[in-house]
Length: 389
Image (tube, rainbow, N blue to C red; front, side, top):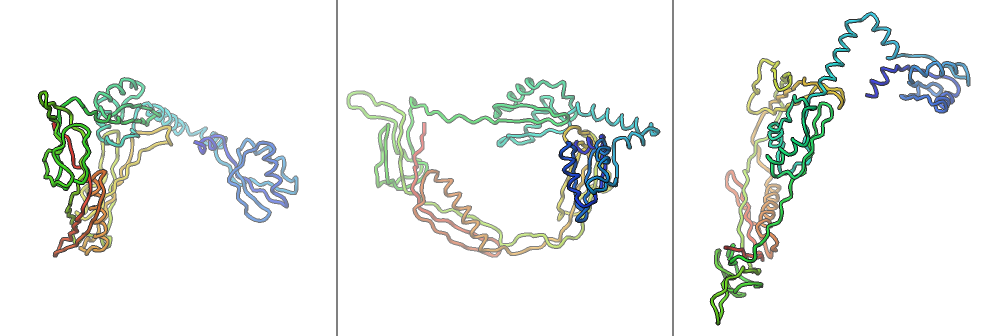
């Protein structure tokens, strides 16, 4: 926009030469004359660009302070108006283009989504389309309140949404809902059972009756703390069992990877195909729209005709680049693969034990003709108790 403003106002390129050309630069600063693109040519010569309306004032300083001012080039301003006086068709065409740009800015041609982590862009765009926000919609007819209410009904995972329209660009800002923590109903009857086999090292009962003791070995599904309380004077009492059961557990987890991988070699050849986009329609220009082969890398680039962020037209071009490579098998770096699998196994073990801790761990590596296998064996301490109704 700054360049268009300068072009409409008109600019001139001047060369200042003399013993002290900096005095004219100081003169510009003192009189509020804006100048830019300053470039020294020699020790006593410098070139600057100013607005055409300031040129007469600078020309009055020609010959003063032992400096000479020479006009190099003039762009825009009156020179454009003079050249357009007899070009009526061009003027009418430019006027129509401006009108079309202004009219196009009343329609949405690009939708940007921000703030979504759980929800995908595709799901949000489908819901927006059902609510009336889609490419080509006349945005002055949209109601932000109606769109927000409809979106909250269609996507319950959204807690807040706003639609901000900037000419042809619609910005959708989303705040996703934070799930409330699970509330434990302490009035119901439950038992605490073993989620996995282990050797009990610590037992803490807050409510209920312990059916095991420290030093016992339990299997998966065994009841550890019962919600049935015995009474010597009345019937058995049923409570919500609560407590923690720390136990030593053992794991053996495997991870595998192929010993050979397919890699790209030398580039054979590449091909570019183009398509035009008018609104929602795509028109293929290239005759062949298929990939060169299955070993191609395919990259699509879409660009719409626009003037900055102010105006956007529903016309664009898609450039599809297909590059074919020679593929061949290569043996992997076994040391790097083993380290990667070890890290993955440790991450999986920590996910399984949650807040527990790892006492000991060891790895073993084996391989055959095509598969590399890494095995993790570990001893851990964790809470194995889970509630069952």
